[in-house]
Image (spheres, rainbow, N blue to C red):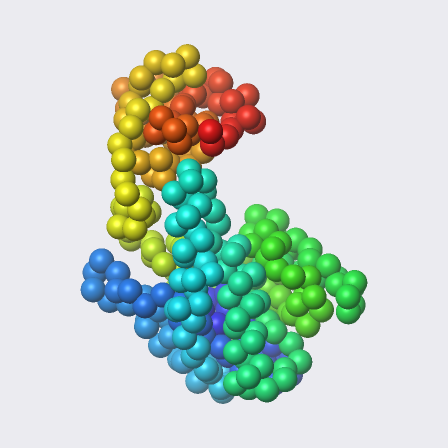
Length: 275
């Protein structure tokens, strides 16, 4: 459980179905945020509150070291090469369905099922189990589980994947009176949070070299603060133009970004690349 409404409702649904449920809270990041409080501590308190309401045991597992070595370090290396990794995909493979399962087995003994609050589904049995999209295509999260070894899905449960609408989760939480029923949905990467600019966060770990942003014809149209500060397909953040500019390429050797305007964006982003 993460301390959010999704995992809270997942635990509630499983308990209602008659399962013997125990919650696991992962602490992956322990740095205080810019306001001097630790979001993971607040989340842990919320997990404890919901588990008390549901009358289930909860356990905290510290995986800060494992997360740094297997996810964060890899993400920094990718950003330094001009690419844009997805830490959540790597976290699910290396941490949640990796070292966490190992810790659970050692700490709690053999278990029957492993459940998460992802909007995804599974089909089949045993070695033939496959991962499917969630019923609500707008909230589908199967992409974040795509790198997980499929052997884990035969004993995995994704109760939320069967719900037609995200709002159904909130309704269930309110009806059950869960402590997280009114908690805002978290959309940020766990080691950054939602109140920090991501480029400013990365600048604390990666050297920041300013450079030029060029048009597709080679004309200088703006400046960037570092190749990692923009993702291919993202707005270039250049003001003073009628049409917005979008990054479609990065040149590592010259420390330059290349951008196109709206009327060219689809053709150029189809061939987007890091040089």
